[in-house]
Length: 421
Image (cartoon, rainbow, N blue to C red):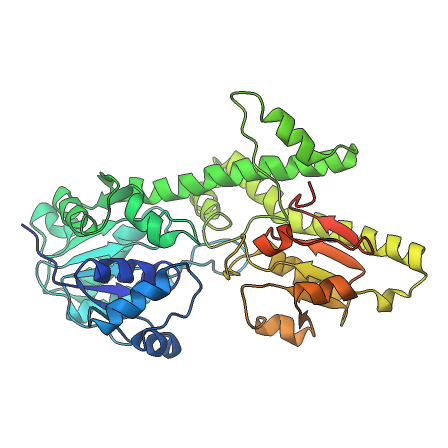
């Protein structure tokens, strides 16, 4: 019987902190590790530094009960979960594993025989094996699965998260979990750990398949979104209401077209398909094309805004420098504060370059703008403020507040989310 008294979660962001809280809520002692001192201090006060429904209540309770604490330096534990970012190296979409490498080298000194190390970070195929190599190099006194197989001192697995921002605390518990151990004993150990709180099935496979599974899930979604986004561009050219068209087409019993938007954002769908393309560039043709379609959608939206500005100039006689443009939404999806890889954010930045000192941003889920937007003299305003000032409204995210708003009829609207429909 495997016993996990203390676990450590490395990376206390949008996935790491909820995961740490879930384990602590179910009785384990949890040590959270993060390089961000502000985040560590915030958590140790029983507060949270991200927006996620229900997370604040759980964190406060677990911290007050002594089940969860955060620190900057790794400490001994029975299991280590690595949940750090996997961004790109520059503009060629090559995966950057430096965060995983740093986390591996940070925990290596405190590993002991019998410990379990799980990579939760969404990773290119082979990253778990690479992590195991980094650990082995740092701790030659211990054995690892690639050296001793089932008899290794340290168990290693890849268990990717598959949760929806805004519903993380529920989905962590209810969703099925893919368990990709480097050996069967590694998978057994990881399954035993996640069963502390996971009510869904824990489905065992190998590490490479687990890595590819997460990438496949998000590539599937990316391809389907690309179809909707491309359809919206075609319909605009043909003077067809894309929202009505999709509604009609979806009445077919085997058709379920998604709703288009201003692009694709977030830390998963906009990133993960590139990991497949990077690994197999000559084979991933459809996945690559979908990425290009979705990455180019923001430029198309900017073109529609430019058309709206020209129309305002013609109707009002204002000079171009007098035009005010309100960008409604900066997050990558509705009703969250997460701006990572957000096409709405990129559109707002590019519009500010073309229309300096004329851009208003409405994002009800953040209290302050990112530094780059502030440097561009973009103003964070309320929705009412934007409705009273703006000549052009650009709906980029379908936040609940925007769905309820009443248009005055005085603005031109570029609606990428169909909220008027």
